[in-house]
Image 1 (cartoon, rainbow, N blue to C red):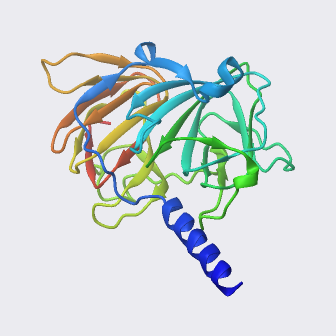
Image 2: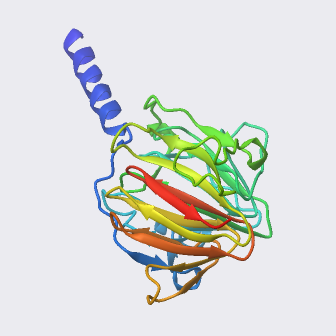
Length: 280
């Protein structure tokens, strides 16, 4: 009996170790752009076919063991069966209303601009109630799999649901890396500010902003959550108009020239620091 217990503990310890979300990124970003109208779509859970939400690739491959970012599209009235995932993911609502919680929990509909975290192994359902529902999902490892609740486990992380109205925004007076005269604001979402460790923030740019973001880390990826962004890697480079659900990545020490015609919120995931300079 003692031997069986030790084996069980060893298996549990191994499962726990595998479930811990990486704190650094195993890939290096490059200068690239994916506009919302050029997203490649498939099914989030191919086994369920059109009963599954649609999934659109931004970077990485969610079916492999690597970081990935993708857009998920839910039909109105969608509600998943209770399930777990083998890895932790984070999500930001882009459009509509989404709920992600225990199957017995009262619906907490998260509007556009809200954030949630779903830990590996935690049983939950996901539901949508808007006419059109879009979310951005971020994973630090893969593959992204859906499994039955009978395989639930505790990886030490906890679920988070943050309504848009509960975001805490900081401005240039609170953060060193934004120019003093800038009206740029940021809300920290997850990660660590220790050297070379992953972190994610929301960046809110005012209407009429014109400037640049310089990436100082090996990995920088940005997704437009709301508003509209005009983006170029250089003065003579291709100009892209980025609507919500669009993405751009940047290699280390490169600058992204950006401008807005209305208030715009961007999700930024990086393995280090970046600098913002603007005229507004």
